[in-house]
Every structure is written in structure tokens, then in C-alpha cells.
Length: 171
Length: 317
Image (tube, rainbow over all chains, first blue to last red; front, side, top):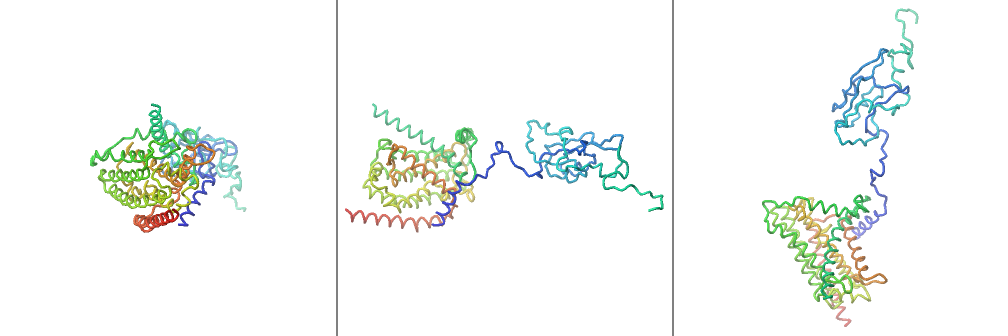
């Protein structure tokens, strides 16, 4: 009997507690930075597209919602001709981000992407590209990779030594 | 002529305000349950979510009102009406204020007890007419629960009747001018409150509709406004029990400063909230525990209370 009364009293005291509810459309959600929401394509610090159109994200995607076509310029830089994510299929698993070798594709803590028309859920490259570097500031794939492009020949990348002359006997 | 107009106004006023209150209770209950679970509850529709009731009503009126082909149609339709009628009729004798009551019946307490016994027919008939084993089990439980709790519900009130020397609810209220009956009749109050919860089939005594084992008990097969009537009937039932507790034990309309009707509403409201708090806090007992509790504890308590009160009243005469 005492325990029943105690229960009643303790439940009554909950009246004066703080509410757990977040009244969502009025109060915005505070999501952690690693939250897996809307997918974006980031740019490197120089403002160029990071994506090198390697198709790894499209292959990793379990629902096949990423479609892209690789192309390249005359200097050896690769970039996607088109890059399309169908968000009505996307399950926000984040495998594309894990697969990406250049930190180009990233998931962001943004989730308000409801649409009235299904076709509007298909995002093209211009919808996906953002102007910044996303979660990895300062990273530039072409500056650390050994690939030769215009303005950077072999051995000029960061933390890279000049190529060894295999025909020379000198160390 | 003016007398006729007056009583007509009272009758319809009571009817309309009761239906409004019982609908509003849906909102109050959801809101209070939420408050006691650290949530907000319905607060979107209208100010404080008050129009939620209206939205729910519109929704339930437009629901398909389906009568299962295997059901006993006539009884199936009558059952929800019975609970509404008995619950509403009981309010006829409740004195809201010195001159505001539908009838000033000299056997008011008996009338209320009789009608609350009639209320059980609604549940039993609903369970029977549904032709469904879970409904029938719910109805069986309801019948057993009601019968056993009815016994000491009546007995617990006899102490009050002894003290007041009348079955008339208005007289009982008048007799509490000096001291509310909750003080001399504390045991009676406890027993009556518990019996009242069992009588209205509210948690923790809602075994007839225990959703985890009987999926909704006696109203499993009901839908649309027929289900709504069970719901509203239940809420009118709680309002009735709260009003009765306020009237019989807490001096009804008596109180300083504020007008009598306000005191009555305030006291009733407090008990309504208490009923909802019980729902928020307590789990449902097993059925045999419920019956054992009724027969082995409440009945002896009520009898003892009656004997002691009777003895004291006799000795002091």
C-alpha cells in the first residue's frame, strides 16, 4: 500500500520535470556532426571538385542510388561528367562516404529534404556540390597523390620524394 | 411555466456540459498522462491542443461503423447505448449547486448505485454480442469484477448515509456543513474510491479490456462511433464517480468565497486528475489478485466501517 502511494507521488512529481520532447518544427534538432543525412559533394581547398569519378561509391551503394559518368580534362584531372543521387532510394548507410578515396562524397547532418514530387528527389551534380570542404578541411587529393597533372609533375606532391632514376647507379 | 423552462434548461445544460466534459476529458487525459511522462501531449490543434477533441470527434464520426457479420446485431447496437444512458441518468440526482440538480430524489444514493449496476449490462452484452472469445472473456471478467466491487461500493456508502440520515444527495451535502464526511468516514472514502475505479473499469482495474491479453476485451469488435460511445461512457463514468466522491465525502458545493457550482467543479476536477494519475502510475493486477483484493480486504473493511459507524451513531444518540 505504501509502495502504491509512493509510486503515485513519484509519478506526480514528474509534472515538474523538464520535458523530454523536442517540438521539432519549432525547435530545431541538434544533430551530431557525424549524423548521416543529406549527401553532398565537397570541393578541395582550391575550389576544385574533389570527386575523381572512380565509381567506388556507386559500387559500394547497396541500393544503387548513385549514378555517375567519368570524364577528364586534357591535363589528366578526372571529374564526373554527371553525378546523380536518387534520394528516394538512398538509405543513408554512409557506405559511399566510406568508399570514397578523396573525401569527396560526404553525409551531412541535414535531413529536411521532403518533396512533393518524386522526381525532385533526384539530385544532380549541381545540387550536390557545395562550395566548401565539408568535414575535411585542407585535404586536396591531387596534392598528396602521385598522379601527374598540369602544374604538378611526378615527385612534386606533398610528402613525396622525386622519382628514383632507375638507370643511375648512384644512390 | 418558468419552472418548466428552468428545469428544461438544467436538463439540457447538464446533458450538453457532460458530453462536452467527457469529450474534453480525452484531451485532459492525454495531456496529463503526457505531463507525467515528461512529454507535452497533444498541443498542436488550437490553443493548448484543445481543438484536438474536435478533430478526434470529426475523425471518429467519419470512421466506418462496422458490425461484424457473426455478431448478434440488435444486442451489438444496444450495448454501447446502455452504458451512455446509465452513466448519463446517474447524473440526474447529482446536486451541482443548491438549486441545480435535475431531480431532487430522496433515494439518490440508491438510484446511482442501481444505475451503476445496470452499466455492467453494457459490457456483458457487448462481449456476448461480439461473438468473439476475447470479448466474451472480457465480459466475463467485467461481470465478476463489477459484481464483487458493487457489493462493497454500496456498503462503503452506508456509513455516509448513516451519518447524514438520508439517501438524498442534496441533504448529504447539507449535513457536511460542519465537517466533511471524509474525516469520520475515511475508510469509507478509500473503499468507495477503489470501488469507483473498478466500477468504471479504469486502470489499474481495467481487466475487462486488458489489451495485452484480451486485445481490447469487450469492445474488440467495435468501431466508429459505437466504440466512441464506450469511450465517452467510460469518461462520463469517471466524471460521475469523481462527482460522487466530491458530493459524498468532500462537501459537494460547500466552500467559502467562490460560488457553489465552482466549488463542485473544482472538487470533481481534482478527483478526475487523481483518476488519471492512477492510470499513469499503477500497473494492472492479475485477475485473481483483483478478486482476492476485493473479497478479502475491501469487503471486510467496508463491513467493519459500517459496524463501527453504526455503533457510534447509536451510542451518540
